[in-house]
Image (tube, rainbow over all chains, first blue to last red; front, side):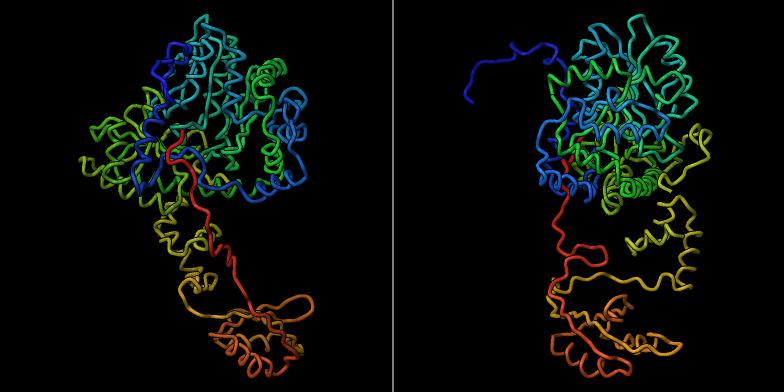
Length: 415
Length: 159
């Protein structure tokens, strides 16, 4: 386009000032490097199981190309309600479940529906890249709850309580966590739930990685006593059924919250695509075996990655969920960005610098193990060479002590 | 044990070391399990799945429906054994339905397979009839798609 004018000044200053995702910058660098093995991918390396794709094709053949109810297809909401009832949570498919365009939309709706300018939102960090900008766009204030590797990248009830002010409205939780792979234990969650109720807060729980739990059992905070009504539970199909590109998620919560979220959704999105909804019905009905297989496969790779990092000498929390390891690379004397850039340059392996997930991610990198065994082995051989050249020697990996106490021990999630 | 088998069935080249890591077990334990599986003939052989067509080798494969007169006490076993001893025979299955044995025979060309069927297979004692179907193209074998064009289409980096 031919323009000499700077149009910046027309843009909403809030939009202007929120930073671009740190991942975007790094992406450009990776794309320019040929022959890269990427451990930077935040999505499954599996293609959506064929029976799910086939169900979608069939629905197209049958002519399902129309709008659905704003809430989503009732049949899908019923299937979601049934899925949630397995964890002891009863939601009415009629007005307590909203089908959205990915958890991303559900998160945006939940934040927009609840956060007024000046409201404070408690956010454990390092954190997934979109939470803080969504809060800022709503005029809310992000209050960081820093987590550390030594603390298993978990927040504590004390930490939550001490961050609460009279403006605090929301606590945002994402466990199993992207980028750290951390999981929460039931005891800590119960303590947090007590604080939340004492101070009359609302929780948004992003449970997208919940099926990908390898240590112990996932506890959904909504399932704890007194929490269901004050929790907006978000989940979707992207990670558990390898359906990222379908963009389908959902929110479950009390009829008021879901109602107001639907009000925004009806004006902005109208409804989630019917083809994706049709596929999701099939995923919930018959997708369990394929999902279990994928989870088992991830767990094997996870163990391989933990072992490789231990050999290399990079301390790392043993990830209990999702498909990320988040090793501490500070021993190399490099910053996150330097480490990622040089590893890419010298060994053609892409990892995501930890500071892309906020300042508390500095000193770490995110390695995704949603990659083939061959690629993982090759990538870690190269990484070992790189780290060794920085004078790092193997030493014992940091192991999650609390993890071992909380559960009978590592188990095959699909076992 | 089942898991070790599953892993080896998907990739037989993985070492006991790798498998031990993947299953969070001791290397010695996995070695022991594999040894036992081999000794008990549960793991029969470690072989490569080859796309010979792509290697430029001319080969033909035929599936032959064989009807057999069963023998007292032995059923179809004697005939099956006499058939599977031929090295040309890739596999033999006892079938339900219209015929008894499904025999897969490999040869350099159609003539070689025809010759084998008419002079060796059809003349075995107890074989009543044969019907030969030549395989025109193999799309998928042992769970592997031969001309798999699906590749990783994901973005190289994503949040």
